[in-house]
Length: 425
Image (cartoon, rainbow, N blue to C red):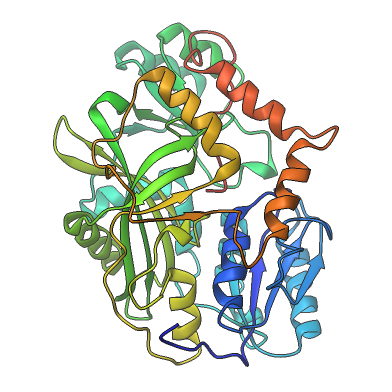
């Protein structure tokens, strides 16, 4: 490794909610742990993959749902900080954690280290409406969207809408109340839209968005870390080959692909809004008009961040730790052609994509190297723990994989659709 991290400053994986099979947290533990940095994590129990990593010094077992009052979550973080006993870099893995840290910077700063950011910006970016408004304000392409305020608004919209279209929950924090839709839902007909809308209540918490047909589009990823002046210290671009659920969810298979145009677009947007910290962006290139359209802005580490590392060995988590501890972040070109595979979801995704006949035009014919999300020769226990939890009696994980694949493209035809998205990429 061409550089050393500050081994006196630990890292803490911060996650709220019940999703124990999260490979991003395991990746961050390994990434910093391999540099000799003490790593801690909040886990659902003592037998999650993250809790059993050889690079984790201690798991703080704290089952949460994401619906707790912020004051309770802040107090829990402070309690963990006191037990660690020294300033610790916070590494959020979900929007709830990223927003909580940003909105309570005053009380958390001291026990913890994290990028200083405008307190309201992460919540705004995590919101579909907030992100859409920022894109319009700063001239960043995004899908056309409507934000109905009532059922009558939906009816009026349906009269002139072009189908199919996509419905998403307007705000990121759908765990606090019953979500209007279970993730990104493709709606095929006017009748399907009106049928769904009857369950959305007096004030529908949805965004109705232009559908970008996968036959005319490509899914791209941007990851980066930006310092206090919103300057990128690490910036990467890649193409998503497969996701689960298909075409709308968590990355299952992806490659590093140079895309200077996309990198410049992301860097310009970050500079305009003044964001600081780690970003994980999803964009869809629309071949019909030649534009990269921003779909999602995750103001935190993405689960697939280990796809991206430069020639100096820097990923976005290492870049953040180096920057927050006052160390230079080594420069280097990204590893073009490197591949990332999430073992437990890429197989069902492969089957689904094979059925659809969809291929990614920019995916390299051959990988220059492959990183697996779970299996690592120097840290085997997370992989076998993942397998054990995947197949243990009573688990819902395999059933959900089957159910999502079975639903396929029938969502929005008038029947109640299921989820075609994931909240923890």
